[in-house]
Length: 127
Image (cartoon, rainbow, N blue to C red; front, side, top):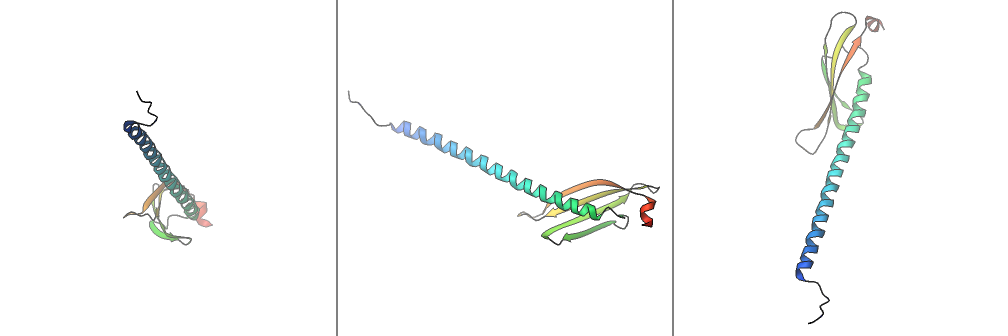
C-alpha cells in the first residue's frame, strides 16, 4: 500500500462548500446591518426635523388647518401638518398630525409621522 499525503476531491469540495456558505452568511449579516444603520440614520434625521417643526407650532395653531412646507437646510425634505380642534371650550384642545417626508430611492418618499395634542389657553391669544 502506498502512503497518500494529498486530499481527496470530496474533501476539497466539502471544504469549498463550507467556506462558501460561511461567506454567504457573513455577507447577509453585513447587508442586514447596513440596512438597519440606514434606517436608524433616517429615523434620527426625521426625529430632529419633527422636533424642529414642533417648536414652530407651539404658538397659535388654530390658523393651521393644513399646511405644507420645506426645510431650507435639507433639500428634498418637506413637512405637512394637519390640526383639528377637539374642543371649543377653554382651554381648547387641538390634535396635531405632523409628517416629515424624506427622499428615498423608491417611487415614494419615506414618511414619518408624529401625532400629538396641544392645549391652547385663552391667555395665549392675548400675547
